[in-house]
Length: 137
Ligand SMILES: Nc1ncnc2c1ncn2[C@@H]1O[C@H](COP(=O)(O)OP(=O)(O)OP(=O)(O)O)[C@@H](O)[C@H]1O
Ligand SMILES: [Mg+2]
Image (cartoon, rainbow, N blue to C red; front, side, top):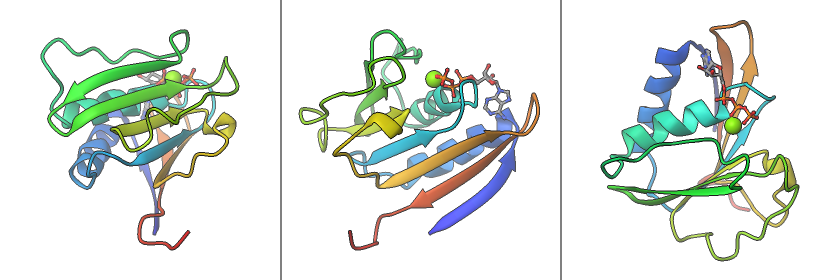
């Protein structure tokens, strides 16, 4: 299943909370798009919608590679492979919701969902959401 829409920040927030409701909490989600497209922003909205533990702050894992958050739907692992170009997700897969920025470098990982962001102008992004769940792989 695939859908496409154009969103501003508020629209992206709505999409994230809608997706949050449809997640079990152990999926692999690929976040694609150029630098500054809004991948981290999307994760921030998604984590907010999942009921984060008090004091949770979503920051870009550019330097940490992987951040971990606690939510009402369980753990969220937020990775950014832009700098490292590779990462072993064995310990994380299935243990929580796995959100991956720059998944082009995530070999051996199959996405349940793919979210692709494209910059249209300063405020608007084209978002494609591809749901691979229910597709035999
Ligand atoms: N509709 C929108 N959707 C997402 N981000 C938006 C939108 N409009 C403006 N922005 C801004 O664009 C920026 C997106 O930055 P963000 O760090 O989320 O990008 P990124 O895709 O994670 O980049 P990187 O590859 O460097 O990690 C933020 O400053 C955000 O506020
Ligand atoms: Mg980012």
